[in-house]
Length: 298
Image 1 (cartoon, rainbow, N blue to C red):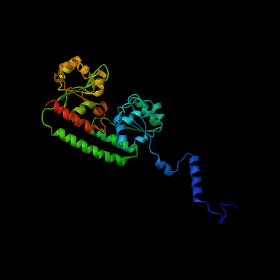
Image 2: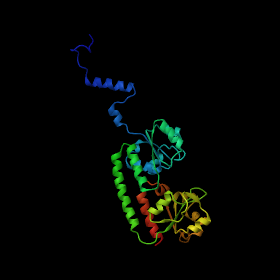
Image 3: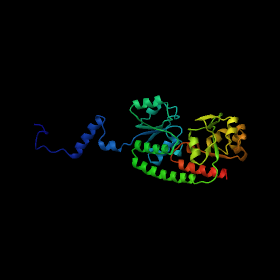
Image 4: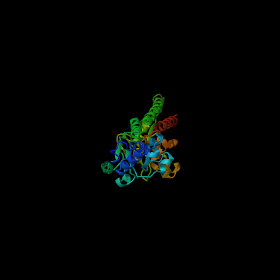
C-alpha cells in the first residue's frame, strides 16, 4: 500500500504542496494566478501626445517603446524608438514584445499594424479628428491598455475642467478675431494649412480665424496665397523657426512681406507637439495662444 493510500500517512506540509504546484505550473508555461496579476501590460505608444498620457498616469515603467514624436517629457526621449509614426515596421514593433500598441489613425502603414495584430498584439487605434474628444479618447485608451482606468478617469476629469475654463475665456473675449495663418516649415518648402488640419482647429479654439480656407490639408506657401490670405498673425512651430536659422531668417522669406503680419512682425511660435499634438497640455497651449492673439490685435 502506498503512502497516498494509507490513512495513517503524515499529511504533506503546506509549503511543500505550494512548491510542487508552483514548479508544475512553471513547467507547463503557466504562471500562478497571483503572479499573473502582478504583471502589467507592456506598452508601445505611437504618438507624442499618447506618450504624455502614459507618464501622467504613472505608467511609464510599462513603456517598452515609443515613436520619434514622443519627446515630452524629457524622459520619453530615452525610450527605445520604433521610428516615425507613419513609417513603422512590424519587425521593429514585435521585437519589443509589447502586449498593446496605442496609436492614432495617422499611424501606419496600415499593413504593418495588421501584421502586428495577426501576431497576437492588441492594437488600439484612436481617431485623430483634432477635437477635445480626441484628447479624451487618448486618455481613455491609455487607461484601458495600461490597466489604470481609475487613474485615467481622474485625469480626464481634471483636464475637462481645465478645458472648460479656457473655452469659457475664449467665448467671452471681446474684440475682433484675428486672421491667423499657420506656416509649417520644417523643410525648405514651407506649407500653409487649410481646413481639416490640427492647425485649423487650434486657431479656432484659441479665438482666431484661419486666414486660409476653401481647401483641406496643406498647400505650398506662395506669394499669391499670402497676399490673398492677409493674415494679422503668423503662427508656426519653434522647430520651423529653428529650421530657418532663427526669427530674422524666417521673416526674410519674400512671401511673408506681402502680409499685414509682416509689417508688425506678428509672429507666434509654440513647440510642434504642444501646438498640434492634441494631448493633455492642449488646454495650456490654447490658453497661451488666446492671450497672444488678443495682444496682437489690441
